Image (cartoon, rainbow, N blue to C red; front, top):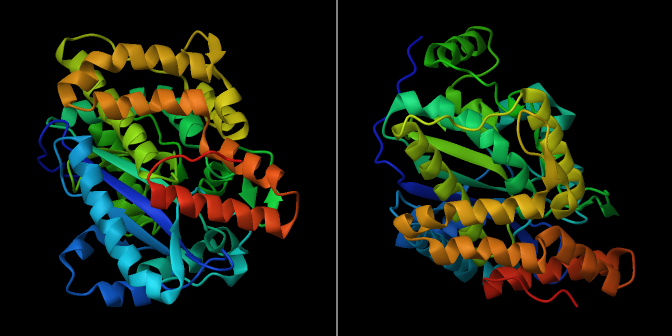
Length: 382
């Protein structure tokens, strides 16, 4: 088959933020997404709000933007629109990779044939996908750049996974992982890390095989952590856990934006892009999901290793000129705040520890996540 890649302005950027709907009093998940979408009808801000797989979830999306600042303005408008209509329902928005105590068996799937097919095919793994993520799209002006950039971005999967990790709890238990979401989501048959294709025709062959054998009905059902998005003309980075606040969303978005532009520039200059064997990439993803910002990650194909926080600090120095060029220096500096103050999974654990144990502690975690979303920034955990 021929897989067309749409025209897209170089380094245009778009954000997608999946948010949970929770009860304002109990903190448990609420199945009110259909009611919220109905209430948003006619509101121009509703263009930034989409239903998702589960009825406890709404996705807030930006338009096609030139800067991360513009994209986060779109996101903020969508969040405000949702909050206006769910407040009378005694519901709130919560951002995290998983809900701390809700049980997957009690969640309802959105009434859409595509989602019903996922559940029918994947059964218990599909029904357990009570997870929330952040997706960043960056425009690529030349199809020949897409696969080299996708392969090279895999070197930085661990950095992004560790920085965004926000799912330490699952079904009222501390999993011991910084990101439980990373391991849950990859159980879907076309999710997880991508194949490292070298040529576009290899990707076309893969898609053709998947379509012919009924694995997928269209390319959007290929849910890799980093993937081409041919219908948008972008590379889409999907590795990040759902973030709890707009400031950290902007920081993660800026990091991806700068990485893609940096790699694109290296290609323009005829310089080699960093790559890593698939087995190292897999190990790095696991280490970042398990240990978060305490992970020691593999840096290169030679197997050199370093603490992810130190590797990220050096990366930020390298990307500073790119950020200046893209107009996102302030947003990229937000990554340094995550390194200095800690990631969401660490704040969540601190809140739980401060409130003892059991259900009251986890309800306090949800309340802290709701408060961070409303504040638009991380908040002290005690």
